[in-house]
Length: 365
Ligand SMILES: Nc1nc2c(ncn2[C@@H]2O[C@H](COP(=O)(O)OP(=O)(O)OP(=O)(O)O)[C@@H](O)[C@H]2O)c(=O)[nH]1
Image 1: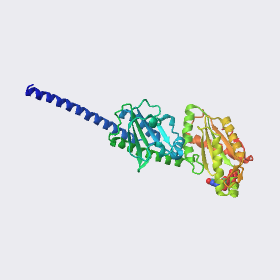
Image 2: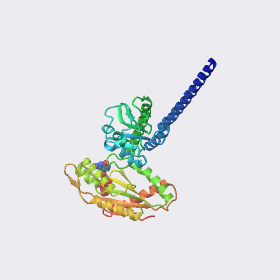
Image 3: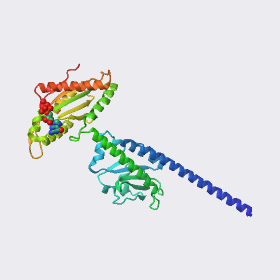
Image 4: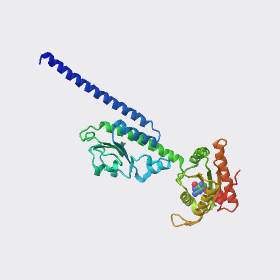
């Protein structure tokens, strides 16, 4: 081979190498851009389901992974309970897993990612329903050096995650996810606190007023009935006078729980203040609402309530029932809401006047 031919071969090899490097650089750039877009997408999520939906919706595709799941530490089931109360449908996110404590993450106190071959005994529970996986990365989600969960990445490629691989990239990804998670979870918790009654744990008036407007709009669109129960404990002042305010508070908690026991999950129970509770019954006409009200009345009146310290007390409640028939669809929802509440209040007044411990239906317009 002549010098000239040597040079030409070397040149070709160099060009091929350059082309390959360029291709790699472009690919890396592309991956970086996709991840940057992902970061922006999740940072902009304003609530829990939106964030979770974006993580599971985008991450497997942009990272080219067969499975992405999250394990979240949820001591005392607080996160789950609050999210469920706020209407989050966990069935939509089978990749979201809750564990009762850090111990169940099987990372021990380790705060570094674990990369390597998929180990069915160790990893199966982290990747429910995933296709066969060959390698995994279990990346701790850290907030203020506290492990709040793990980001679990599963690949069908055995070379994708190996113990010798650098972890900067996955750690960066996990840190952004952890910040976003903590942020939306505390926002949702605040939202929950603002919408619930701290004494009884049921919704408060602010929630019910808002929900009522939404439900009226929906009931009008879909032509179904909405009913409203106004419940007031009889002679509650006497209960407070004999048992003290704390005893009265216990009774209120028990009342909330008994009313709740008679309702469907779609119904909304709120404490309107003092010893007044209201219930919004979805898709229930006057007859079914009066039937539910009668069940609530009976449940309040029946067995005695045993308070801490062994004191027993019996109570009764009066209930006013009003209905907004589905076809009634004129005017602003606010006016319809005010009228519905006023009708239930009038019926409650009649129940009190008629001797208490009874259900009275509002006669209609
Ligand atoms: N323990 C406790 N008592 C409360 C709370 N909010 C209001 N109350 C009391 O509830 C009582 C309400 O009394 P009233 O509105 O006069 O009515 P009542 O004694 O229930 O009599 P009727 O409704 O006419 O049967 C008052 O004694 C209030 O102090 C609370 O959060 N905790």
